[in-house]
Amino acid sequence: MTKADLVERVAEVGPRLTKKDCGLVVEAFLASVQDALARGEGIEIRGFGTFKVRHRKGPHGPQPPNRGAGRGSTP
Image 1 (cartoon, helix red, strand yellow):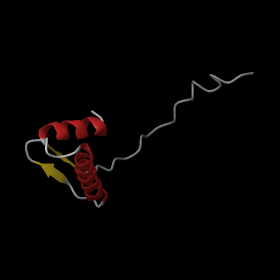
Image 2 (image 1 turned 90 degrees about the vertical axis):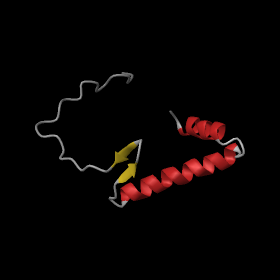
Image 3 (image 1 turned 180 degrees about the vertical axis):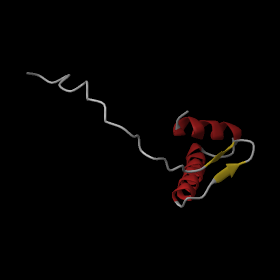
């Protein structure tokens, strides 16, 4: 589902709102979620799910060779 699809669905549920207004609502919601995650806060939307940023260690061991090197280039 894309952001445009989400705006469309919100517009279907709220017929008094224009698509432009629905777009502003979706943008504000996503910006709020993004800001909270950037600050390290968790998000809990009951009945939907929880979101939090997880910091993971990088992979260990040697890097695999780049098998696609040279493909698509002209001689």
